[in-house]
Amino acid sequence: MDLGTIAGLWRYPVKSLKAEPLTHARILADGLEGDRTAALVVETPTHARAGKPYRGKESAQLHLTSDPETAASYAVDAKVMVTLDRGQPRWFDAGPVSVLFDLWVRDVEALVGEALDPLRWRPNVYVRAAPEFTRREPALVGTTLRAGSAVLRVVATISRCVTPTYDVGTGEPLPLVLEAVATQRGNVVGVYCEVVTPGEIALGDALRGD
Image (cartoon, rainbow, N blue to C red; front, side, top):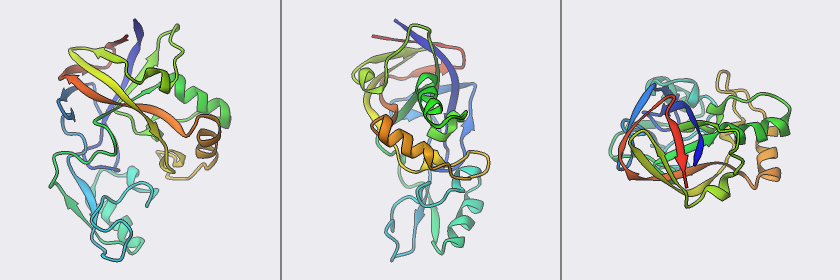
């Protein structure tokens, strides 16, 4: 079944920092090559996130920069010390590849009454839905997805935090986004996938599924 066309590809070399746009990507067994291979880890011993990644939940500015030193300065402004850590193969939230359909973004746009950049949801793969595609996230769980030479399996929906409320260009919050998602969409936007078959994908590839 034709589900749509890949319209955006992004990886996040440092977790929670600015997205890097791609025209094509190699999907390895544990996710996109070069995706989230480092994180800013909290060193302040009294902080609730001590020893864990400093995230968008803690700073609306992190996604505005790809430079770890600049991001660390934002943490210092909040009196938090962080260090760049490459000690893990990946710094995932809950799944190696995230997929977002424009249909789901339009759902939220209709609720808040304005256009929203899909990067608010920090997807790896952004899909322009085929005209006949109407499924929302829960209906995709368990589905096998194929694009290029890669095969993915949808394993979970993505529950959302405050991060999508931040404008990707300014960091300014729009609280209505999270309110709408929480009350009207079960706090879900997007899906997580596991990698069944590693391979190459590119902008313009068709996405097919069960």
